[in-house]
Image (cartoon, rainbow, N blue to C red; front, side, top):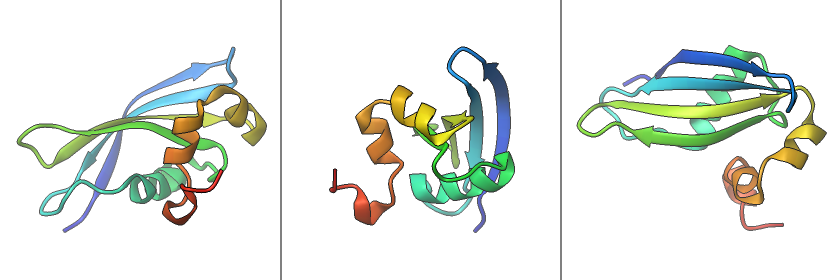
Length: 101
């Protein structure tokens, strides 16, 4: 019961100083992985720190053991905090810290 991640599309956005990455997660024999699990794997694949990577979307494809997602990887943490809305920043916090402001 493993999870594999494939990068589908990669785009540089110099105006916002970020990379925009579309990805697919194959999770055969298990439920849709959590944002935290996917984020941890993407950090390794994209060589990015936890403070600069934000997952915006993770949607399971109907009837398949596959999910599609979108993430942004910023050049620095301050730019990410300035650009991403509050709900996206909360979604990407560790599960125990999400209720804190």
